[in-house]
Length: 354
Image 1: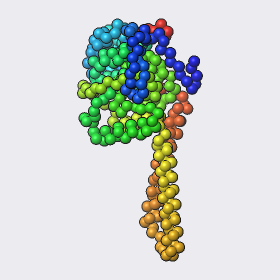
Image 2: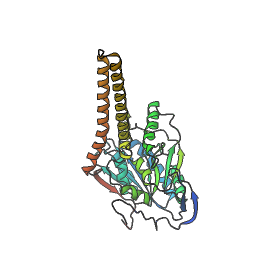
Image 3: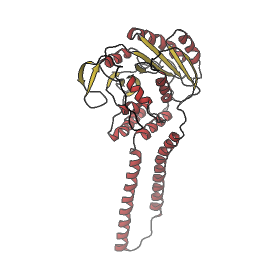
Protein backbone atom coordinates (compact mmCIF):
# COMPACT_ATOMS: atom_id res chain seq x y z
CA UNK A 1 0.00 0.00 0.00
CA UNK A 2 1.35 3.41 -0.96
CA UNK A 3 0.59 6.50 1.08
CA UNK A 4 1.87 10.05 1.02
CA UNK A 5 4.69 9.07 3.40
CA UNK A 6 5.63 5.62 2.11
CA UNK A 7 6.38 3.99 -1.20
CA UNK A 8 5.96 0.23 -1.59
CA UNK A 9 7.69 -1.07 -4.70
CA UNK A 10 6.73 -4.66 -5.42
CA UNK A 11 9.24 -6.46 -7.61
CA UNK A 12 7.50 -9.83 -7.55
CA UNK A 13 7.18 -11.31 -11.01
CA UNK A 14 9.77 -8.99 -12.58
CA UNK A 15 12.95 -10.74 -11.59
CA UNK A 16 12.14 -14.26 -12.80
CA UNK A 17 13.12 -17.12 -10.54
CA UNK A 18 14.82 -15.84 -7.39
CA UNK A 19 17.36 -18.57 -6.98
CA UNK A 20 20.97 -18.97 -5.90
CA UNK A 21 20.72 -16.15 -3.37
CA UNK A 22 24.09 -15.09 -2.09
CA UNK A 23 25.17 -12.45 0.46
CA UNK A 24 26.89 -9.37 -0.87
CA UNK A 25 27.88 -5.89 0.17
CA UNK A 26 26.50 -3.14 -2.08
CA UNK A 27 29.06 -0.60 -3.15
CA UNK A 28 27.05 2.46 -2.16
CA UNK A 29 24.72 1.22 0.56
CA UNK A 30 27.47 0.48 3.06
CA UNK A 31 25.59 -2.41 4.62
CA UNK A 32 25.25 -6.13 3.78
CA UNK A 33 22.30 -7.24 1.69
CA UNK A 34 21.05 -10.28 -0.19
CA UNK A 35 21.23 -10.42 -3.97
CA UNK A 36 18.79 -12.69 -5.79
CA UNK A 37 20.01 -13.99 -9.12
CA UNK A 38 17.77 -13.20 -12.08
CA UNK A 39 17.38 -15.75 -14.85
CA UNK A 40 14.91 -14.29 -17.36
CA UNK A 41 16.25 -11.99 -20.10
CA UNK A 42 15.05 -8.41 -19.54
CA UNK A 43 13.49 -5.93 -21.91
CA UNK A 44 15.95 -3.04 -21.91
CA UNK A 45 15.37 0.68 -22.40
CA UNK A 46 18.32 2.98 -23.04
CA UNK A 47 17.63 6.65 -22.30
CA UNK A 48 19.91 9.14 -24.07
CA UNK A 49 19.36 12.89 -23.47
CA UNK A 50 20.85 15.01 -26.23
CA UNK A 51 21.30 18.69 -26.94
CA UNK A 52 23.14 19.74 -30.09
CA UNK A 53 24.60 16.25 -30.51
CA UNK A 54 23.92 15.67 -34.22
CA UNK A 55 27.49 14.60 -35.07
CA UNK A 56 27.84 12.42 -31.97
CA UNK A 57 24.54 10.60 -32.57
CA UNK A 58 25.79 9.43 -35.97
CA UNK A 59 28.62 7.66 -34.15
CA UNK A 60 26.76 6.55 -31.01
CA UNK A 61 23.57 5.01 -32.39
CA UNK A 62 25.18 2.38 -34.68
CA UNK A 63 27.41 1.19 -31.82
CA UNK A 64 24.55 1.23 -29.33
CA UNK A 65 22.16 -0.70 -31.60
CA UNK A 66 24.81 -3.33 -32.36
CA UNK A 67 25.63 -3.72 -28.66
CA UNK A 68 21.98 -4.08 -27.60
CA UNK A 69 21.30 -6.62 -30.37
CA UNK A 70 23.98 -8.84 -28.87
CA UNK A 71 22.92 -8.43 -25.25
CA UNK A 72 19.12 -8.66 -24.99
CA UNK A 73 16.36 -9.96 -27.27
CA UNK A 74 14.09 -6.92 -26.76
CA UNK A 75 15.26 -3.35 -26.43
CA UNK A 76 14.46 0.28 -27.20
CA UNK A 77 16.44 3.51 -27.37
CA UNK A 78 14.67 6.59 -25.98
CA UNK A 79 16.21 9.81 -27.30
CA UNK A 80 15.26 13.03 -25.52
CA UNK A 81 15.98 16.13 -27.61
CA UNK A 82 16.43 18.81 -24.96
CA UNK A 83 15.96 21.95 -27.07
CA UNK A 84 18.66 21.33 -29.70
CA UNK A 85 19.39 24.15 -32.13
CA UNK A 86 21.47 22.13 -34.61
CA UNK A 87 20.49 19.24 -36.90
CA UNK A 88 19.90 16.76 -34.06
CA UNK A 89 16.20 16.28 -34.90
CA UNK A 90 16.99 15.69 -38.58
CA UNK A 91 19.64 13.08 -37.80
CA UNK A 92 17.25 11.29 -35.45
CA UNK A 93 14.62 10.87 -38.20
CA UNK A 94 16.72 8.34 -40.10
CA UNK A 95 17.28 6.21 -37.01
CA UNK A 96 13.58 6.26 -36.10
CA UNK A 97 12.82 4.77 -39.52
CA UNK A 98 15.21 1.89 -38.76
CA UNK A 99 13.05 0.89 -35.76
CA UNK A 100 13.66 0.46 -32.06
CA UNK A 101 14.07 4.20 -31.46
CA UNK A 102 11.59 6.49 -29.71
CA UNK A 103 12.02 10.26 -29.57
CA UNK A 104 10.78 12.92 -27.18
CA UNK A 105 11.39 16.43 -28.46
CA UNK A 106 11.04 18.95 -25.64
CA UNK A 107 9.64 22.39 -26.40
CA UNK A 108 12.83 24.10 -25.17
CA UNK A 109 15.94 23.37 -23.14
CA UNK A 110 14.74 22.25 -19.69
CA UNK A 111 18.08 20.89 -18.47
CA UNK A 112 19.59 17.44 -18.20
CA UNK A 113 17.76 16.45 -15.01
CA UNK A 114 14.38 17.13 -16.65
CA UNK A 115 15.42 15.37 -19.87
CA UNK A 116 16.50 12.26 -17.97
CA UNK A 117 13.22 12.27 -16.05
CA UNK A 118 11.27 12.55 -19.31
CA UNK A 119 13.20 9.61 -20.72
CA UNK A 120 12.60 7.46 -17.63
CA UNK A 121 8.88 8.23 -17.74
CA UNK A 122 8.77 7.15 -21.40
CA UNK A 123 10.94 4.04 -20.95
CA UNK A 124 9.04 0.74 -20.82
CA UNK A 125 11.83 -1.76 -20.18
CA UNK A 126 12.38 -4.04 -17.21
CA UNK A 127 15.77 -2.38 -16.86
CA UNK A 128 16.68 1.18 -17.85
CA UNK A 129 20.15 2.37 -18.85
CA UNK A 130 20.99 6.09 -18.68
CA UNK A 131 23.89 7.40 -20.75
CA UNK A 132 25.10 10.57 -22.47
CA UNK A 133 25.17 11.12 -26.21
CA UNK A 134 28.72 12.51 -26.33
CA UNK A 135 30.40 9.05 -26.47
CA UNK A 136 32.19 9.57 -23.16
CA UNK A 137 30.18 6.68 -21.69
CA UNK A 138 31.52 3.39 -23.15
CA UNK A 139 28.74 1.36 -24.77
CA UNK A 140 30.70 -1.81 -23.95
CA UNK A 141 30.09 -1.26 -20.24
CA UNK A 142 26.38 -2.10 -20.62
CA UNK A 143 27.32 -5.79 -20.80
CA UNK A 144 29.01 -5.51 -17.40
CA UNK A 145 25.96 -3.67 -16.04
CA UNK A 146 23.68 -6.50 -17.18
CA UNK A 147 25.91 -9.14 -15.67
CA UNK A 148 25.69 -7.48 -12.24
CA UNK A 149 21.93 -7.03 -12.65
CA UNK A 150 21.50 -10.74 -13.42
CA UNK A 151 23.54 -11.48 -10.30
CA UNK A 152 20.97 -9.54 -8.27
CA UNK A 153 22.00 -5.88 -8.17
CA UNK A 154 19.18 -3.34 -8.55
CA UNK A 155 21.47 -0.46 -9.54
CA UNK A 156 24.77 -0.72 -11.38
CA UNK A 157 26.56 2.59 -11.85
CA UNK A 158 29.82 3.63 -13.47
CA UNK A 159 32.31 5.11 -11.00
CA UNK A 160 34.90 7.47 -12.40
CA UNK A 161 38.38 6.31 -11.43
CA UNK A 162 40.23 9.62 -11.42
CA UNK A 163 39.83 13.31 -12.26
CA UNK A 164 43.45 14.15 -13.13
CA UNK A 165 42.44 15.58 -16.50
CA UNK A 166 40.07 18.09 -14.89
CA UNK A 167 41.10 21.52 -13.64
CA UNK A 168 42.23 21.96 -10.04
CA UNK A 169 39.26 24.27 -9.46
CA UNK A 170 36.80 21.55 -10.41
CA UNK A 171 38.59 18.86 -8.40
CA UNK A 172 38.59 20.99 -5.25
CA UNK A 173 34.96 21.98 -5.85
CA UNK A 174 33.87 18.37 -6.27
CA UNK A 175 35.67 17.33 -3.07
CA UNK A 176 34.11 20.14 -1.07
CA UNK A 177 30.65 19.64 -2.55
CA UNK A 178 30.44 15.93 -1.77
CA UNK A 179 31.92 16.54 1.68
CA UNK A 180 29.03 18.89 2.47
CA UNK A 181 26.42 16.72 0.74
CA UNK A 182 27.42 13.57 2.63
CA UNK A 183 27.90 15.38 5.92
CA UNK A 184 24.45 14.37 7.17
CA UNK A 185 25.37 10.70 7.22
CA UNK A 186 21.91 9.31 6.38
CA UNK A 187 23.05 8.11 2.96
CA UNK A 188 26.13 8.59 0.82
CA UNK A 189 26.30 9.96 -2.70
CA UNK A 190 29.40 8.46 -4.39
CA UNK A 191 31.72 11.28 -5.47
CA UNK A 192 32.76 9.67 -8.75
CA UNK A 193 29.34 8.48 -9.87
CA UNK A 194 27.31 10.21 -12.55
CA UNK A 195 24.19 9.42 -14.55
CA UNK A 196 25.72 6.50 -16.48
CA UNK A 197 24.00 3.52 -14.86
CA UNK A 198 21.58 0.63 -15.18
CA UNK A 199 18.50 0.50 -12.95
CA UNK A 200 15.88 -2.13 -12.33
CA UNK A 201 12.27 -1.18 -13.05
CA UNK A 202 11.59 -1.02 -9.30
CA UNK A 203 14.26 1.65 -8.88
CA UNK A 204 12.92 3.67 -11.82
CA UNK A 205 9.39 3.54 -10.40
CA UNK A 206 10.71 4.77 -7.04
CA UNK A 207 12.54 7.68 -8.69
CA UNK A 208 9.48 8.68 -10.70
CA UNK A 209 7.39 8.66 -7.51
CA UNK A 210 9.53 11.48 -6.08
CA UNK A 211 7.34 14.61 -6.34
CA UNK A 212 9.96 17.36 -6.19
CA UNK A 213 10.70 19.56 -9.17
CA UNK A 214 14.15 20.58 -7.95
CA UNK A 215 15.54 17.25 -9.10
CA UNK A 216 19.16 16.53 -8.26
CA UNK A 217 19.23 13.01 -9.64
CA UNK A 218 22.62 12.02 -8.23
CA UNK A 219 21.15 12.54 -4.79
CA UNK A 220 17.87 10.80 -5.62
CA UNK A 221 19.74 7.72 -6.90
CA UNK A 222 21.32 7.35 -3.47
CA UNK A 223 18.22 8.35 -1.51
CA UNK A 224 15.98 5.59 -2.89
CA UNK A 225 18.50 2.96 -1.80
CA UNK A 226 18.32 -0.59 -3.25
CA UNK A 227 21.23 -2.95 -3.79
CA UNK A 228 23.94 -1.11 -5.74
CA UNK A 229 27.19 -2.10 -7.40
CA UNK A 230 29.89 0.27 -8.65
CA UNK A 231 31.83 -0.42 -11.85
CA UNK A 232 35.08 1.58 -12.19
CA UNK A 233 35.63 3.21 -15.57
CA UNK A 234 37.54 5.95 -17.36
CA UNK A 235 35.45 8.26 -19.58
CA UNK A 236 36.27 8.42 -23.27
CA UNK A 237 37.19 11.66 -24.98
CA UNK A 238 34.29 13.69 -26.29
CA UNK A 239 34.18 13.21 -30.07
CA UNK A 240 32.39 16.37 -31.22
CA UNK A 241 31.19 19.60 -29.69
CA UNK A 242 31.75 20.80 -26.15
CA UNK A 243 30.18 20.28 -22.77
CA UNK A 244 27.22 22.52 -21.92
CA UNK A 245 28.20 22.53 -18.23
CA UNK A 246 30.44 25.54 -17.69
CA UNK A 247 31.62 26.73 -14.27
CA UNK A 248 28.46 28.75 -13.54
CA UNK A 249 26.13 25.87 -14.41
CA UNK A 250 28.18 23.50 -12.27
CA UNK A 251 27.91 25.93 -9.34
CA UNK A 252 24.15 26.13 -9.91
CA UNK A 253 23.88 22.34 -9.97
CA UNK A 254 25.87 22.15 -6.74
CA UNK A 255 23.50 24.64 -5.08
CA UNK A 256 20.52 22.59 -6.25
CA UNK A 257 22.06 19.46 -4.73
CA UNK A 258 22.93 21.08 -1.41
CA UNK A 259 19.55 22.74 -0.91
CA UNK A 260 17.71 19.55 -1.92
CA UNK A 261 19.53 17.13 0.37
CA UNK A 262 21.15 18.90 3.30
CA UNK A 263 20.48 21.70 5.76
CA UNK A 264 24.17 22.06 6.66
CA UNK A 265 24.41 25.58 5.14
CA UNK A 266 21.59 26.75 7.40
CA UNK A 267 23.24 25.16 10.41
CA UNK A 268 26.56 26.72 9.44
CA UNK A 269 24.89 30.15 9.42
CA UNK A 270 23.47 29.50 12.89
CA UNK A 271 26.87 28.38 14.19
CA UNK A 272 28.54 31.44 12.65
CA UNK A 273 25.98 33.75 14.25
CA UNK A 274 26.50 32.09 17.63
CA UNK A 275 30.28 32.38 17.28
CA UNK A 276 30.03 36.07 16.36
CA UNK A 277 27.77 36.67 19.37
CA UNK A 278 30.34 35.05 21.66
CA UNK A 279 33.12 37.17 20.17
CA UNK A 280 31.04 40.33 20.60
CA UNK A 281 30.28 39.40 24.22
CA UNK A 282 33.93 38.72 24.92
CA UNK A 283 35.06 41.94 23.27
CA UNK A 284 32.43 43.89 25.22
CA UNK A 285 33.63 42.35 28.47
CA UNK A 286 37.22 43.26 27.56
CA UNK A 287 36.28 46.92 26.87
CA UNK A 288 34.29 47.12 30.10
CA UNK A 289 37.21 45.79 32.12
CA UNK A 290 39.62 48.14 30.38
CA UNK A 291 37.35 51.08 31.17
CA UNK A 292 37.12 50.13 34.85
CA UNK A 293 40.88 49.74 35.12
CA UNK A 294 42.19 52.57 32.95
CA UNK A 295 39.28 54.91 32.39
CA UNK A 296 37.72 56.02 29.09
CA UNK A 297 39.81 56.17 25.93
CA UNK A 298 39.13 57.56 22.48
CA UNK A 299 37.44 54.78 20.47
CA UNK A 300 39.14 53.54 17.32
CA UNK A 301 37.07 54.48 14.27
CA UNK A 302 38.89 51.91 12.12
CA UNK A 303 37.84 49.09 14.46
CA UNK A 304 34.23 50.25 14.42
CA UNK A 305 34.03 50.55 10.64
CA UNK A 306 35.73 47.19 9.99
CA UNK A 307 33.50 45.48 12.58
CA UNK A 308 30.36 46.94 11.02
CA UNK A 309 31.39 45.87 7.52
CA UNK A 310 32.13 42.35 8.78
CA UNK A 311 28.76 42.05 10.51
CA UNK A 312 26.87 43.43 7.49
CA UNK A 313 28.69 41.01 5.19
CA UNK A 314 27.84 38.06 7.43
CA UNK A 315 24.20 39.14 7.60
CA UNK A 316 23.94 39.41 3.80
CA UNK A 317 25.56 35.99 3.32
CA UNK A 318 23.17 34.49 5.86
CA UNK A 319 20.22 36.12 4.13
CA UNK A 320 21.43 34.72 0.81
CA UNK A 321 21.67 31.18 2.20
CA UNK A 322 18.14 31.39 3.61
CA UNK A 323 16.98 32.91 0.32
CA UNK A 324 18.29 29.91 -1.64
CA UNK A 325 16.07 27.59 0.41
CA UNK A 326 13.08 29.93 0.19
CA UNK A 327 13.56 30.15 -3.58
CA UNK A 328 13.45 26.35 -3.85
CA UNK A 329 10.24 26.31 -1.83
CA UNK A 330 8.79 28.93 -4.18
CA UNK A 331 9.62 26.76 -7.21
CA UNK A 332 8.06 23.68 -5.62
CA UNK A 333 4.75 25.27 -4.62
CA UNK A 334 4.09 26.57 -8.15
CA UNK A 335 3.60 22.95 -9.32
CA UNK A 336 4.69 23.65 -12.86
CA UNK A 337 5.43 20.62 -15.03
CA UNK A 338 9.05 19.53 -15.06
CA UNK A 339 9.14 19.64 -18.87
CA UNK A 340 6.90 20.12 -21.92
CA UNK A 341 6.97 17.64 -24.81
CA UNK A 342 6.65 19.27 -28.22
CA UNK A 343 6.56 16.06 -30.24
CA UNK A 344 6.75 12.29 -29.77
CA UNK A 345 7.49 9.81 -32.51
CA UNK A 346 9.04 6.42 -33.14
CA UNK A 347 8.24 2.92 -31.86
CA UNK A 348 9.74 1.19 -28.86
CA UNK A 349 8.59 -1.37 -26.34
CA UNK A 350 4.97 -2.00 -25.36
CA UNK A 351 4.27 -3.15 -21.82
CA UNK A 352 1.14 -5.15 -21.09
CA UNK A 353 0.51 -3.17 -17.92
CA UNK A 354 1.08 0.23 -19.61
